[in-house]
Each structure stands twice: as C-alpha cells, then as structure tokens.
Amino acid sequence: MKVIILCGGQGTRLREETEFRPKPMVPIGGRPILWHIMKFYAHYGIKEFILCLGYKGDIIRDYFQKYLWNTCDVTLGLGHNAPIQFHNTHAEEDWTVTLANTGEASMTAYRVKQVQGYVPEGEPFLLTYGDGLSTIDIRASIESHRQSGKVCTISAVHPAGRFGALRIEEDGQIHTFSEKPQFEEAFVNGGYMVCEHRMFDYLPNDPRVMLERAPMDALVRDSQLNAYRHEGFWQPMDTYQEAQYLNQLWDSGKAPWKVWQ
Image (cartoon, rainbow, N blue to C red):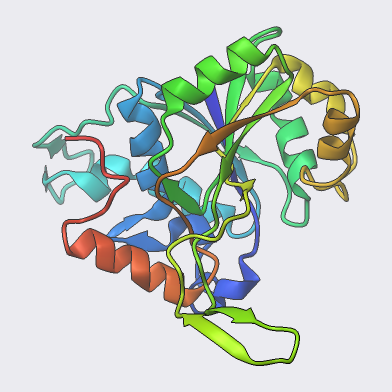
C-alpha cells in the first residue's frame, strides 16, 4: 500500500516556524516532523510515499533530493568531475517518495485528487496529514477498514487538552478546575486514514473543496465512513507550543511515537 501525506498547507497558526518553511519540515529532534511520520509508517512495512506539496514545496523537494547529504558522512574531491563517496548507510534506503506539486492554494480534497494517477486502479491507500504524531496501530486500522467494507476509515482520537477544564453550576459557581487535562472526551479525526480507491470518486476536481467538508459529508450520507477508535497518544502540531512539547518528548527520550529501532 502507498500512503498519501498532505504537505501543502500554509500552517498559519505556526507562523513562528512556517514563515520560513512548510509545516511538515518543522524539526522535531533535529528531523522534520514529516520524517517522523514516514518512519512511523515504515515501521509497519509501508515505505511508498506520495507527498502532496504546495506552500514552500521546494524545501521538501530539496530535502529528499539531498537526503544522502543530509544523513551520511561524505568525502568529495574539489576538482572537476571528482568522485563523491557517501560513507554510512541509513534505514530509509528502501523507501520510495513521489513528490507531487498540488498547488499552493489548493484545499485538501483537491490535493488528494491530483495524485490519483500515482495510486494503481482498485488499490487501497493510506492518507494522513503532515503535522500530527501518534501511536495508532496501523495494522489494526487497516484490519478495521477491511472488516467494515466502507470506502474510508478515519482514526478517531481524543484531542489533547489545550485548555483548563471547568465544571460550572447553573449559578455560575466553579466547583472543579483541571488544568489542561490529558485528553478531552470527544473524538476528532486524527488522520491516519485508510481508503479504498473509490475514495477518489468522492473528490471533485475543484481546488476550493476541503476533504473534511463535502467529501466527508457525502461518505456519511452514503454510510461509507468507518471509524477506528484510538485511545492512546495523538498530538497535532498546530502551534509553536505544541512543537515545543513534541521536541521536549523527543529530547527526554519519551517520544511515544518512536516505535522504530
């Protein structure tokens, strides 16, 4: 299976970082968050990636074009046509990465629609966002999808608590206060989706359409949307504070998403 990763948004809520680079390239522990997402999928044996590029996509292209330069020690001569020797290997040598320009202003549904040609007819695929880390069991989500028989399975996650939780009585008196609970009770779409090829039929050829609006509404209307519930770690990187938090987890050696060796 291939995994499509949405990498084209402008990340306006993370302007401290995204003024200079696309959000998937914001570093966590010295590597782009996109690399962490790809390493997570590769742990489950999924190593074919399609990246939907947009805002500052040239930075992502440059990163992968120069991947050996970025990850290996190198010896090079300074003469004309001098040989270049990369010394050490890396665990990503069996990955394939398709870099697709899907437009700087495109919405998410249109980005996915534009890479349809890279997914063989009838073949299911995975789909996620380039700015969220998790411990979602990819194999279990695929099995849930297969058993459901639906067109699309989303990973339903609890959003990490961002605000203090209050219990307020009718008279306005606050009886409990919990500062930033670990998880909220509601479920949200955490990405890490599994899709049948028929998913492309729900995506119009219109750059103004968001995946999370009309296509999802149509899937619900047709009873074609399944949920795989995930009760564990899931953390988006929408703000500078969340980027700092993910870096703290990595630096402390307690990054839950680091399941690879």
